Length: 71
Image (cartoon, rainbow, N blue to C red; front, side, top):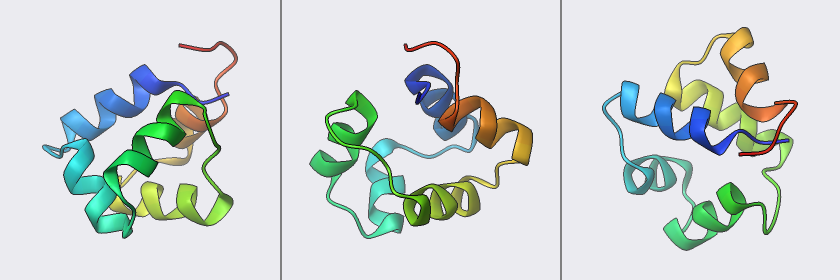
């Protein structure tokens, strides 16, 4: 399950905004928010792109995208 709080924290730590990250991904901001809320899921390709954009370690990526509990 996606840890929205961890994802938001990483975005902020990198000095980014949801708007800037969604733009870098080539994704509409509303779509990005829907994925963050769990209305739809991030695809593997989207997760890989987010990992690259945010410079996440494997540990951080696992904590965000494969969290045990839901935010």
